[in-house]
View 1: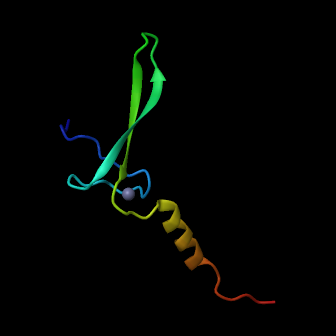
View 2 (view 1 turned 90 degrees about the vertical axis):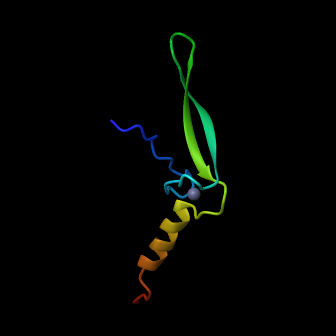
Length: 71
Ligand SMILES: [Zn+2]
């Protein structure tokens, strides 16, 4: 089994965050265990400009749309 940490994926652009890229780690409450301890879920986001994945999807959709219509 590898000792490498799991890949950090940006919440905004869904790209892997490189080791030297600026980013934030956000901790979210996952769930409470019966013993009262908390399971935290971490997420990550670039702090530099990155294109939201939804914008890329919209651009692709516009390019796939028909360019002319017939009446
Ligand atoms: Zn990003």
